Amino acid sequence: MSTKKDSFTVDTGNVSALLTGLSDRFTGETTDQRPDDDTTAQRHDGTTAAAPQAPAPAKPSKYTLLLDQDDALTLDQLALALRRRTGRAVDKSEILRALIRLADQDDHVTDTVAQALDRRTNT
Figure 1 (cartoon, rainbow, N blue to C red):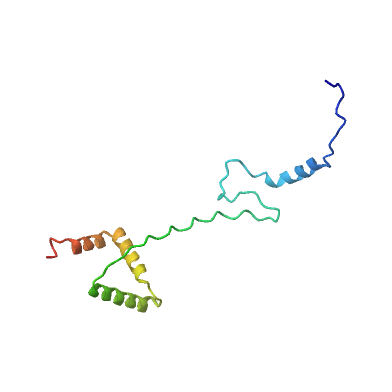
Figure 2: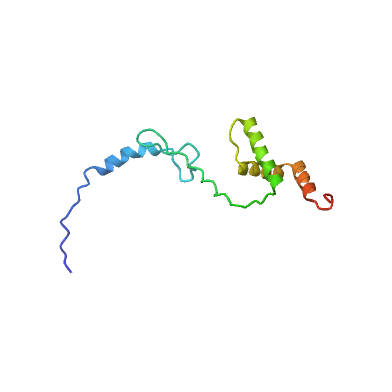
């Protein structure tokens, strides 16, 4: 084993002094911060980090709908009436999605659909 000391030194070139100057900008940060609390550290240009993006909407499911001639004509007429009323083209799948949401949210609509589907009262 050698008793000779290492004769090598490392010059940091005042890096620690540079780092000390940077730490002043981040004094308001804590480890329990959430990204949306508006107290995140500022960037060197004075702006804060952008808020996280909302996740992309789920891909819609695809269904096949079989309509008889009368129901298909009624859906076409409904799409045309809604186009006149809204001033924009209304897709038939958009109409069906709206009807599904209405039936889910409004008990009166759900009851009306149930009555229309109840074979005991439709015979």
